[in-house]
Amino acid sequence: LKLVTVARLEESQKAIGRCLLAAQALLACNLAFEWLFVGGAYPEDDVLYKAFVQKAGLEKNVHFAGVQQNPFSSIRTADVFCFFSRSEGLPNTIFEAMITGTPVAATRVAAIPEQILPGTGWLCETARERMVRLLDTLLHKPARMRAATHILAGYQSENANEQKSMHALSYAP
Image (cartoon, rainbow, N blue to C red; front, side, top):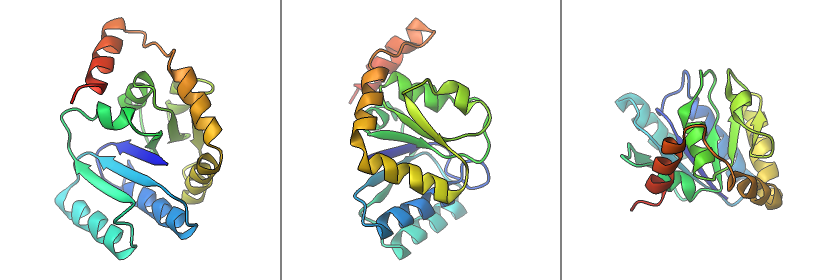
């Protein structure tokens, strides 16, 4: 399973540390996955996250790509876009993932439940155990991801120009 998160890499809002704990739990269950984190981190957080990955033995599973000018190809090639924030407003990255055809797994906070259309993603509560349970379910039922990807193939943004731009960017080198 190929997971991707695109966000500011910090704990108070985006809960990246909790995502790393979820990755550790997935590894402990011997589940096969890769999780790519795209985005910048405060220097002190960057050091902590990378040290945790090394200490937890997650080097083969968790990767940090830093800030990318064009993260859309990383989103498009993932099986699931993960967005497990503690708090949010209306995150653009969820729309961007859906435009690129990638199903979304996210926490049930703020406007996120309204963003995810039926059959295009999955919601969970903010507890780490709920995140792990959701990802474990997706790992064991890949047909759910294929079905969501199929539905998203017909997803259209309300803004046609945005849709065209995102599609072009997701296939850019």
